[in-house]
Image (tube, rainbow, N blue to C red; front, side):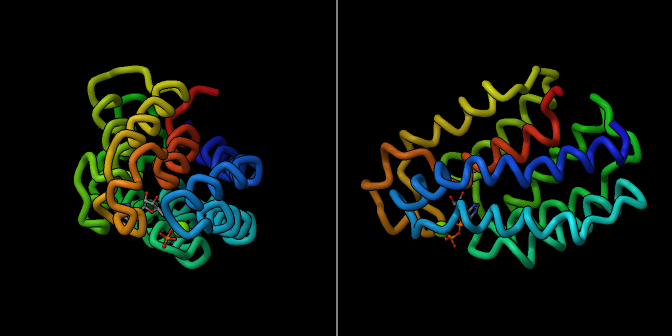
Length: 191
Ligand code: ADP
Ligand code: MG
């Protein structure tokens, strides 16, 4: 995938998050403060004005900087930092082999910035499981990504705002896990 194709995929996320805004709002209303839908729409709506497609590295870096200063909440710095970290490893043409380093960087960035590990009921659960699956050469389609997000339902949150809900957080999909399904689908999904 070249820089133009990846740019199109990132810009498509503007309408994806507009479509999914109320879904993410509902999820964050259950175990947070209800702003995750609005946050993601605001972040991606800023993208067309700030995205730099002069190289794949600049595409990821400009996306990261834009998300960092426009999403807000806990998720803004996490997604923003991840794209900046991915920009340091991404190659000009993303293929099945070098995409592994890209996802590894995504996962490591969240782990580092969020001080999070698996099964804490966050976006990291989806991102790290997608990373593992891609590393193992498995096909990671929308259905598989959604299954990773759905698995956060049974977990009690121990990170972020959802952790204040303690046992009451069980039974709901984590909002950031759900938004990361769409971001990962843009990065690695098939057309
Ligand atoms: P806020 O919690 O500040 O309102 P958002 O609603 O935009 O921010 O994002 C919430 C999401 O951020 C959660 O659903 C979770 O996936 C993610 N999150 C929060 N804290 C962490 C963390 N320490 N590590 C990884 N992800 C986190
Ligand atoms: Mg929130």
